[in-house]
Length: 202
Image 1 (cartoon, rainbow, N blue to C red):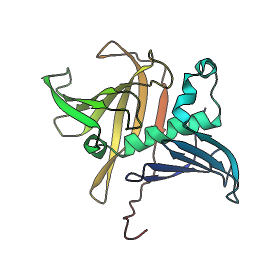
Image 2: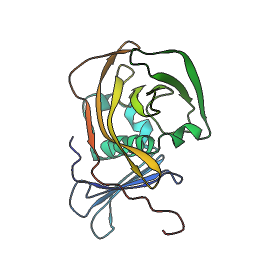
Image 3: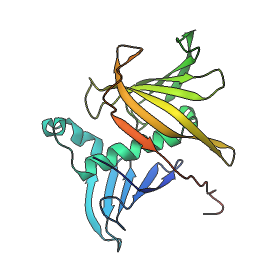
């Protein structure tokens, strides 16, 4: 799957992500944790799915995803990535500092997410550089499978209205707790422009 030239509207507090120009120009994919919609250019419902995460338990999902599966994965992943570090303050998330540094000198934040938080996996690790920037995020993409251990490398970031967003990410397979396999590139994320809109301004 390739999701290109999308305009993304993310509501961090409302747990809602809209992917504009999803599937076709003018269409929208709307993610919430428990309900997905695909709307055409006139706002007419094209497809929907209730309790989308449960559908990944079906054996066919090991070999083939449909548009709603991709919408679910992209929606919750973007909600997590663009919401960092505030997602770590979400109710249902417990964070502790690892006792040791990794090889880069970064500190590791170990986070445990309960079932109320839509995310990759219960246990995740965030690698924080001495500069306080996120440089790596480790997790298991459980909707793909318990074997889908990944290292999400943060290669660039941008500060907008006092908030930092990680705009260049590359995801590689992870072997064991620390080792990263150099190929294949599992996910490639480039965000070219960000605008922050406050609640009061709509």
